[in-house]
Length: 258
Image (cartoon, rainbow, N blue to C red; front, side):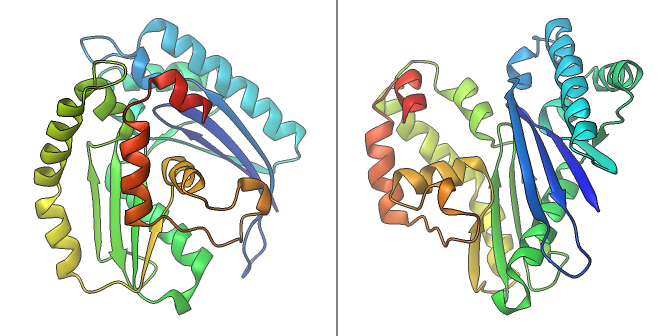
């Protein structure tokens, strides 16, 4: 069966078309992304702006058309942090449904974390043992760990990359002192969650499941996307420290060119 999965995130809208087979890994057929930056189209009251809603409706309509053209028997559409946190999310969701026919299901942070963990478990299988999964989005950070398909611990924290950049790193490039202050604040914020994860048991495999991790791994020498989805890619602490020391001195436009 061919399925379309539409993911409306804080920064991008992503349509993944897959052929799903019972008992096997889904086979990706096509991937389409659009940079919407919905979190940046939120006003001081916490509402998604009319311009942001307009762009969302247009993008969802375009992607629904792509899904139909691709032969999808079903389109599953989800929205995460940016829509979840908006004060006017109900109005925006109603408009999307009225104008596109697509019903966006808003995932809670914990549900988002649990579903991501389930996907990781299905991908790596039972031989992976206990898994720790980290997923950094634009608005939130999801942390999960467990030895089954349902994690023992599932956390969703307001520590997304885009959110932290907007709230903490006003200068471009950010000052060295400001980066250090943010690092110390994050260490404090993650103290309790990290203890909760460790208390659930030692993991056998740590996994990063987001474009942020993929990009960081690529910049530290991991295989490019063109090498295929099953090529092993790793991100080491030492490699990450060296990379951060380098890219933290760059402007946003220079980082984007990497």
